[in-house]
Image (cartoon, rainbow, N blue to C red; front, side, top):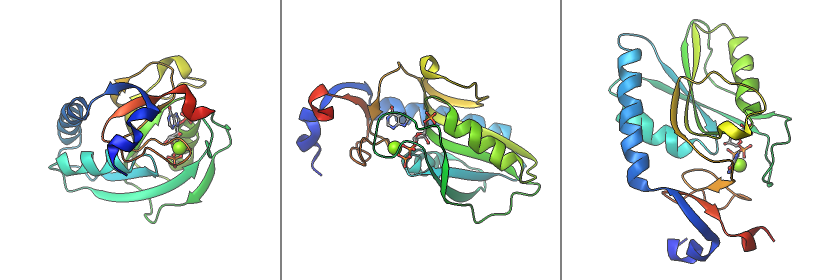
Length: 183
Ligand SMILES: O=P(O)(O)OC[C@H]1O[C@H](OP(=O)(O)OP(=O)(O)O)[C@H](O)[C@@H]1O
Ligand code: HPA
Ligand SMILES: [Mg+2]
């Protein structure tokens, strides 16, 4: 998809590619320091976290392992159903591991609070969260997050992994959609 094809669908650009890149550098440096000399398993949450996971992992100097889980609570809409389904489980055994969940966004918090409880029940040494985006005003449950890229307003955003009806994930920036896209 040529990005000029979707330009008419966007209302606003919230975060540029450069802003995202600089933030990833910061987060990676913190993670490298915090886990120095320790085992670390990155768990990416499909599909939205693909970009954040790939870009963050490449900035780490730490010998991490990477695994993936697919859960879905949004389907094709703009509201969380609150019901989280596992579409694909991890391959790794979490017993005694330091787990860092990598997410694109914490919106209501329902997905992550469910996922953290689920992963904690598997006997890991630790479970922490790194998310690129968080919407503080949308929180329905509090989630304890160790690494946050950006707090953003309570608006539906797309790009950098985030979709609307499976589109716009490949935009290298984060933006909001024009109203006509929803109608
Ligand atoms: O904090 P919450 O309100 O629970 O929302 C956050 C979750 O919603 C999105 O996933 P989605 O279910 O859309 O799946 P996707 O990553 O495949 O798009 C996003 O990637 C998070 O996993
Ligand atoms: O703002 C959002 N955009 C896309 N997907 C999402 N999943 C939760 N919040 C969002
Ligand atoms: Mg989605």
